[in-house]
Length: 95
Image (cartoon, rainbow, N blue to C red):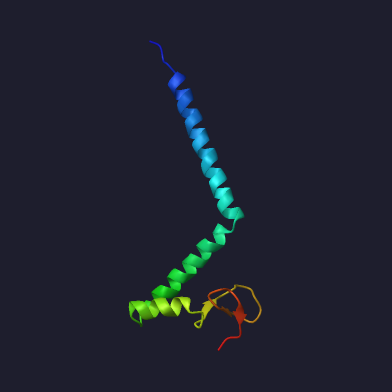
């Protein structure tokens, strides 16, 4: 009984090429700042979810993106306790 491993080698090459392509794509996303977009997107979703509990859909959407409402970020170990940031990340004094 003989086993033919020629197709297995070809499959290994295809998998290796796909992994290399995925790695390059991931590195390009990180280099151009895509990870910050992901973090910002998570913050927007959290804000929208919080606002939509007390407001209508459109009001929650407006409050999420108008820049007037603060989100609270807690930094463990930072002096002074929690810090407040606008949606775009500029620090402001707490209300």
